[in-house]
Length: 351
Image (cartoon, rainbow, N blue to C red; front, side, top):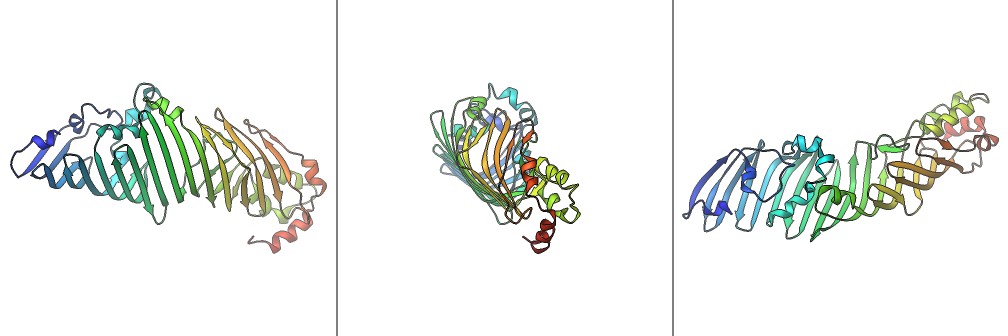
C-alpha cells in the first residue's frame, strides 16, 4: 500500500531499496534472501503502468492496481531467491516457521506472473505461469520437451487442498530416497495427485499431507533388478552358471522399463498401493503390491520371465526393507531351459 502514496500526481517514479522485505513487514519471508531492488513505472489515478521491477538479476515488466499486480519476465530463477541458510536448516526451522508454499496467501492480493522459462533446483522448464487469486494458487509448466504440469493449492482457514496433474513430465533424478531397495529414475510421468493437509508451521503442513495418486511411468531405469544384463548374457548361459546369473538378476542391478502404473495412497511420507501395480520391462512383466512405512519399503511381486522356458510361470518374490529377498530359486531352475532362452533372445532381440 505504500506504493500508492508515493505521488498524488500523474508521474514517473523510481524507488530503490536495500531489502524488498521491508515492504512486507507482516509477511514471513525467511525462506527468501534479503535482496536489493529497483521499482519504476508511471503512476496515474491509483494505477501503475510501465511497471519494471528489478531484483535478483531479474527484470519483471507489467502493471499494478491497488488490488492486483501482473508481471512477466524472460527467465524466472527461483533458486536465486532462495535463502541458503533456510534451505540447509529447514528440518529444524520447520517446527516454528511457516511452509514456504503457504506464504503467498499472506499477501491478500491478486498476482499473475509469467515467464518464458523457469529454473528450479538447477532444472529449466519452458512457459511458466503462476497466479494467486483469493485463496487459490495455480502453477503451470508447458514444456514441449520436459512435459506439462498443472498444480492448484486451495486454502480454507488452515486447511489446504492440493491437486497436481502431470502429463509426460520428465524426472531425471531418483523418485525415492536412495536407500530404497527398488527405485526409478530418468522416467516420464503422467499422474494425478490429490492431497490434503492442515497446519500453520511447516512441519505440520508437510507431516499432515495425505491423499491418493494415480501415476503412470513411461521408459526409465529401474534400480533393484538386473534383467537387462541377464537377458544380454543369454548366449553365455550354461547349466553351471545359470543359477548365478538368475540370482543376480533377481537381487540387484538396473533394468530398463517400458511402462509402469501405480495407484496408491500417501500419508505423512508413507505410500501404499491401492491396487496391484503393473510393470512392463523388456522380456519381463511384473505385478504386485508395494508399501513404504517409516522410510522402509516392502514389496510382494510376481515376475513373469519370458523366454526362460516355453511355458514360464510367475515367480513370487518378497523384498524386505533391508533388501533381503525371498524367492524359490530351485522352483525356477526346475523348468529353466537355457538353450531355449538363447533361441528366444535371437528371435526377440527387439522385444
